[in-house]
Image (tube, rainbow, N blue to C red):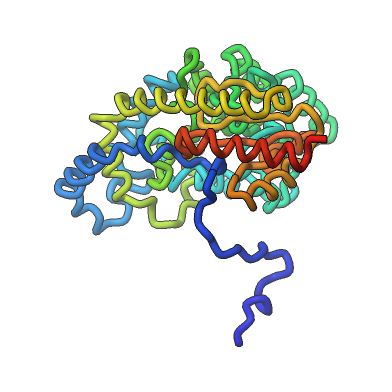
Length: 394
């Protein structure tokens, strides 16, 4: 019998377990509400896209290596309206989800032993990828209004004393994942000024910025940048459908010209791009209004359930957008152990250690309220509270 273990290297990743389906109460991942998928509009868009542009499927990169031109033109409009950003089609690269954007930037800028600055609570995929690349991560505090510029400055000063130049500053300024915070305009300006002073690029991940219902969306950091030092990432995963796997990088053409050689996949899927382009030009903004209204309601359902079943045992901030709530247990608890125990009872949560490098990360967990139904939110949080009280509440 052939044994693959004889051929993989010692530092290879562990084997993946056989998938057994979604748990009964699924509060993990970036899934969205199935009722929010605009099936009829996507069907119409797909028919039109295939009938009028389907022959382009015979070609790789029919609009060139940057991606389908009509979709890039819509992104120009969307970014101007929302992120207050002006760019051209040549500044936009269509990618297969924001994860590919992250991989491309890492491939372009990083080598083992480099240093990267990241918010101390951040997207778990960033931490795991940087660890795998043997990158030193410096974590910046996240306050109620996002990344702390003063702490960032202290880190940059300390690194300069050590003759270390960080390769980039990674931030999710609008609806931060997992904390849900929104970086104020004043702090965005300050962080950009620090990047200029210390000559460090910024990687701005804005994948949740379309999902806002509380307050006004501040201008993107890239829109404030006059030197081309900000690389911007966006996605249609949360606003339209995660499984479409369509995201985009925005950067000055001289920056994209260094990133593009690492995109060796023959181009992201064209069918998804032409359908999205057709859908977005007629439906995107009306659809987004429906999405945010529904997500606001479901966030209130989860907050009510947490208050009802956990009371003063936990603290959290009611979100102004996004799909997550970042929950902290008031008393010390190992949420990784809680997540394992809960999963046995059909409740899936993300323990804080997967989303934070804070020393007290094991007191936190992240819960997605977008995917489960209202009844599933109530039943799942009830079940989770019972597990917590029976196993951990002394």
